[in-house]
Image (cartoon, rainbow, N blue to C red):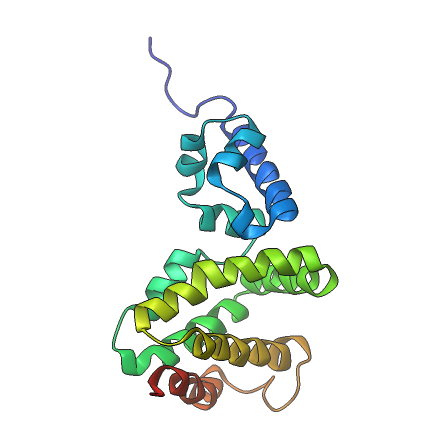
Amino acid sequence: MARTGRRPGQTETREAILAAARDLFGRNGYEGATIRAIAAEAGVNPALVHHFFGSKDQVFATALHLPADPGVVVAAILDGPRAEVGERLVRLFLTLWETPASRDAFFGVLRSVSTTEQAADMLRGFIQGALLDKIADALDIPPLRVTGIAAQLVGLAMVRYVIQVEPLAGASHDDVLALIAPAVQQYVDRP
């Protein structure tokens, strides 16, 4: 009789891959870690890394407990009229920060990157390669303007969620969206 159900060791294999990924991202940064190297470090075939995670971006996001799949984030930002990119981006950002599990993960990432250069290097490479470069290419805008968007959003997160400066910290989702989305959109629209 053929066995069915969960393959023995699947959880351990997944955890071994994540441990290897954390180690390699830590030693080599985002750009320096490859799917093949992660697989070799975990003692598995690279196909298993793809099976469990799909892409290097997803391995990184999972290994660092990031609250969102970068491919889904980029698709959500780009899906719709260009004139509404700022609104979609800020709405998604607010939603992620206002979901308790996502907020906790963001706080963890902020603590890591603010206390160790290694974590900052890893996150910088990931944000650049998995998010900013893809958005810049898709919208055909200069990288400097895309990093301006990132700066606007990181500033929003710091003031609203980390430092909690009023009245921004207590403002409604709609009020923050109305305030910040036009500023983000100008980075997209500027010639």
